Length: 441
Image (cartoon, rainbow, N blue to C red):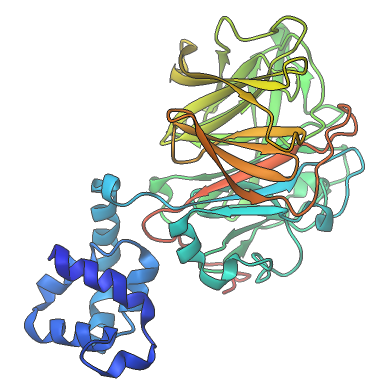
């Protein structure tokens, strides 16, 4: 069966070639298999095909193949097979880089993707849609706000937009959310500085969108016991409406406003994000099941290094939280990097995985940012100037992965264009979107 599968994997992507009608072409090869294999054997072969696009291509070979792959029991078995044997089916990933918000609140055109990184398998999944018109199936230019698995949360306007979409770039499906009346009521001035898209197996094909508000008054305020009360509007696609909820957490050492969108990630029904950009000294963990906030303090030796302040970033790798600690030493023209793994969020227990020191890129381009690799815990992405490098921390090697279409400013805190990286990790089968009147393909 392994030999048969490897041959199908190699040939099925060429369906439509001129040699399809002879015995050596893909159709001829699979036609011979169809003559000797019963449906149960074929099903066992098809559920072991390496990715969903290959399976869909195989379904076009014959009516019998189409019948088997379109059978309702095929997708659950395909997904189960890939989940149980993840070592044999590495997860494809895609990373979208874009500029972050500035005080100027530019239009959506300003925040278009300036770099898209695809793993080899992700590139095959996207097919022709991986070109410069990556999101051209949407009604208008969009700002990518957040991601979860293979879905993206987008807005068509600037920071004040009350319209939101969720889309799947692989299937080119999108879903328009009902307008958030909390943002358009006009009763109070509201700004959203964090966005989260949440999927949970219990939701089925449904999802939730969370908007973390940072208005002037009164949604972010000091509550009783000198705590901070954070208000969040939540959209549930199953209910088709927004609701307002709040949670309370101990007041930070420095209370201020975020000038840039903050990275926010989900793992095991917990949302993790840095408290404030530029002055963070702890991670906030929001338990969605109880809607309670837990403070995750940084490691004890995380902080100032000499006269240089440490910058930080978080991410998720295989369901585990990673914390990146970065110090730039101008005198030595190098970057000091530490990678921490969160062992227990309830007790703020971290373990140091890597500690490296890297010289600047050969052309001495300016350091822009470092980002967590979405599927490999031993790798990170570092952006120097307009070039994106993948660093293997275990092997001490690096390679260039791509380049930014536009340079990113790294001026003062009030003028910098912080670079955002929105990761997508594609599951075994594309995530479907729920039905809605404005749902399109």
